[in-house]
Amino acid sequence: MNAAATAAAIRAGQLRATEVTEAALADIAARNVRTNAFTEVTAARARAEAAAVDAARAAGRDPGPLAGVPYAVKNLFDLEGVTTLAGAKIERGRPAAARDAFLVQRLRAAGAVCLGALNMDEYAFGFTTENAHDGDCRNPHDPARVAGGSSGGPAVAVADGLVPLTLGSDTNGSIRVPASLCGIFGLKPTYGRLSRQGSYPFVTSLDHLGPFARDVTDLALAYDALQGFDPQDPAQQQRPAEPVAPLLGAGLEGLRIAVADDHFARNGHPEALAAVAVLARALGTTRRVTIPEAARARAAAFLITMAEGGNLHLPDLRARAEDFDPATRDRFLAGALLPATWLVQAQRLRAAYRAVVLAVFETVDVILAPATPFVAPPIGQAMTEIDGRILPIRPNLGVYTQPISCIGLPVLAVPLADPGTAGTPHDLPIGVQLIAAPWREDVLFRVATALERAGICGAPPVPA
Amino acid sequence: MTQPPFDAESYARQAAALIALPIAPAHLPGVVANLQTAAAMAALVQAWPLGIADEPAPVFVAQGTQPGSQK
Image (tube, rainbow over all chains, first blue to last red; front, side, top):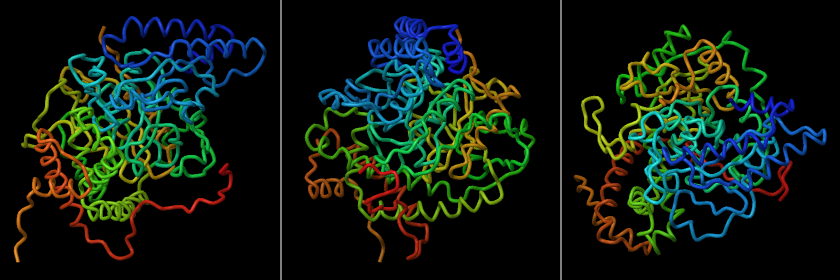
């Protein structure tokens, strides 16, 4: 049952939140071992929240739009009474969080029930969720393959049906990459749309938070609940909430849709480009558009990420470098050493690049681009062939996502309902990025809904 | 005058000393490899011709009282 149906049944008194919670807890206890998505199950909290929802309804109060809906969060979100791990051994000795992250507070206020915290790459610096401390997070479509990352646990928990909603973070692609590899919907809203207060930062210039779901209705329900101004996030823009749920049926009329060429028409395996073509055919668009200088933008994001990440962790790099995950340590160390002129130039390039990309959106409303250059690779595989060159898998998983988050554009990653239509190896899932101008999440939800209703997009079933 | 090749290991040692960051011998090869990757990325970034009007992207806000602020 999806989140919308669960909330509707609980609100109507046909189901109790406590029943839903107990069933979800039992399911996680039985099945999490297969994928290692959850790193902490907050059973006592979940039972208390569910009881509060049932009590509210019994007392005639509105239990909220997400009444009794189970959800979980990437373990970089603060949960009151739980130590925020951010995937790191180093954080395990820190005190428990004194209060919930802002977005967790929003979901709680909407009646949702928090079941726990989810696996991720250490400090969000990765695209695979191969974590030396918590163990690898495995893809439910093939447990021998990576989940994608860094929000691997959140994507897997939704794809595998453990919970209908999760929250993740996306600095360079960490929502969109695992959404693509696990075959679910993921939203990276405009930079500054949702508060990041109470989440462990990675690169504050580029950090975004957002939801995952198995269908567009649930994604919209979550996104609408998450919106709200928080003066404690200095990057959040003070804008009124712009709910998307009422717009889902608005259709495609008047929308100008094009396919990204150049950087986004190479750098990947055939199935990544074929997935875009499937969506373009369904939408009846033959138009192409160029996002200029995407490779330079990706390079700028790369340098900003290394420099800010290295600086953030410098005290621990000095004192206890051995305690970092080997997958992140040397990148953080190198990042701390970058010359200042590289960082400043990257930030200046970012502003100039934003200007040229915003000009593109004067003639188009939604751009289609691949989300990942290939399907989920086997856990542990380091290299693959791309355009005739042997290249490292891990950094290249972000080749299509980094140039977009570099300037904070909103993106909805949508999964192909039948990956076979793109010819993916072993019918493994793959997604496509729907990209819009800043603050135009509304048009992304309209296109995603149209594609879902046409049967083109949807979460492919996980093999039994 | 030709540009001497980038000696990432020498740079790593000197820059690490400058910021008092000890780097264990076992970690040095990985640091060097990452610096070389960063240098390739920086070459791309440096090649974009920017003018004096191209300010860095982050906008610092002198907080004070914003509408709705609780601070």
